[in-house]
Image 1 (tube, rainbow, N blue to C red):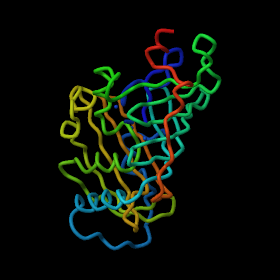
Image 2 (cartoon, rainbow, N blue to C red; image 1 turned 180 degrees about the vertical axis):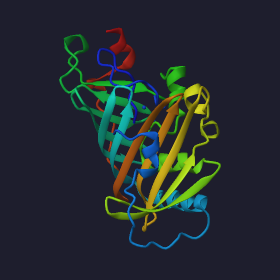
Image 3 (cartoon, one colour; image 1 turned 135 degrees about the vertical axis):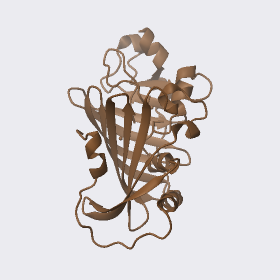
Image 4 (cartoon, rainbow, N blue to C red; image 1 turned 90 degrees about the vertical axis):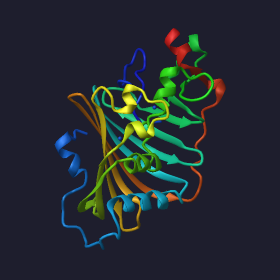
Length: 271
């Protein structure tokens, strides 16, 4: 999940903001090797096309309500790691965001809004509250944030990222590889961002040289083991790798922070 630039502590450029959502020192050339290139234990070749295999994985993942997530997010100011879990129906994410040189920042996506916690508190001026909320959809969302919410790479849950890959006009079956010792089939496609965005903006629609290549490694159980979203913005490349485990039919239990411990982004920016 790419973070919005936080005032007084500009953690990340708001590319997901290219937060619904978007997952190292990987380079564009390394994108195809997000999994170890080893001879995997033989898996049968999935029947049908690569597109059909990805659609089947999306359908199977849709039978689960929550999953454990470990992501590595490359941004302009360093590499961040995010560990936590995600849920669907409704879509929620709860991650611990770590960027070298900064304190760990708990981050929650719930009810169409992105919450970022400042564990040390925000001081007396803000009533010692801990959370800053950015509303991405519905009443209270700015036009920019509404456009941001239309970006399917914003949230790094498997359901959204599989949808991102499924939008590709052509999906390639790269071959069989292993991910942390798990044999998997590797698929790749370039997302059709304009088709996915309900209200396209330059950061979403692929204008201004923006594109996203999505790689997926799907295990023998038909579920994604790892996904890699590589955003290219001109000459800049931002690879975001996400590993998934522990798919569960139980709800995630993720909820928004208490309102009385939250201030809006506008209040925060206004000081």
